[in-house]
Image 1 (spheres, one colour):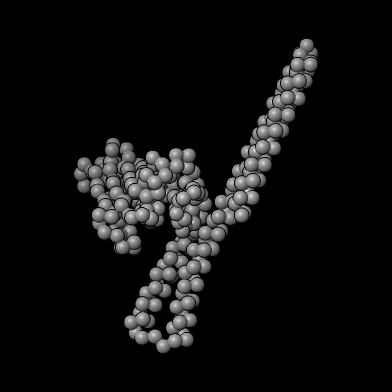
Image 2 (cartoon, rainbow, N blue to C red):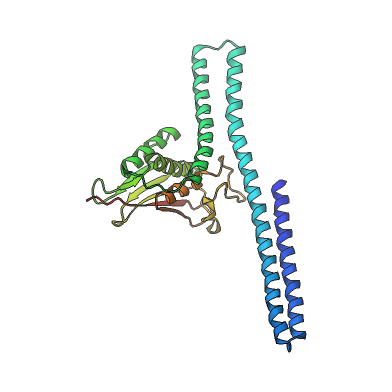
Length: 303
């Protein structure tokens, strides 16, 4: 209901701005036509007219952006509230069951395991929010250490397989490197680990019909290394490919399954890539045709 009202507000301000610009154009044009012989008046009128139209256009753009930003903030708050509330409610239910009823040892161990899973989910959400704030404020640092990016990616792939209970064929990894150690970078290992993990988790999350992910690490030249994460999931419309890296942004599309999350994962990846002098971008042929996200980093030259 709130989203619908926001969209109506955007349409209203956009229409209102266009109408004002049209009226200003009509009045200005009429005034110029009526006073075309008075050269200085026409010149000043054109400047004044351009200033009015520019102000109206900028004001409309600002209002529309603020409405969209507020909508994204509301969606983020709702998503985070859900991600925090659900595991807390689940843990509380298990604790109340253990407190009020006699439970056999096997059942008790199952409850403990489920509570641990909910706790990990809760901690993951908190860490995601804290990490987004940290990487957004942190500037590129000159203090970097050599990192074997291929070993780091292999570790992230193994952790993703264990966390999501995936087989090697569901999350396949291959290195297209000319020689061992060719994927060295200078960077922060913790941040790079976070970026790769977010890419893998995002690919799994948006593969509701079955996980089939291919991870490729390559060194196409002496300057860069490239990590590609290709899934066969829900895909992304062409006009959304750049927006998905914005903070709080989540693709909304009719018929698309609702996916849990905070809308911060790819924003964190982009921030980390920029802090390391690299970039990240997405490619997709459209909805239902999968997505390929590419992380490109400067390659460390070995003397």
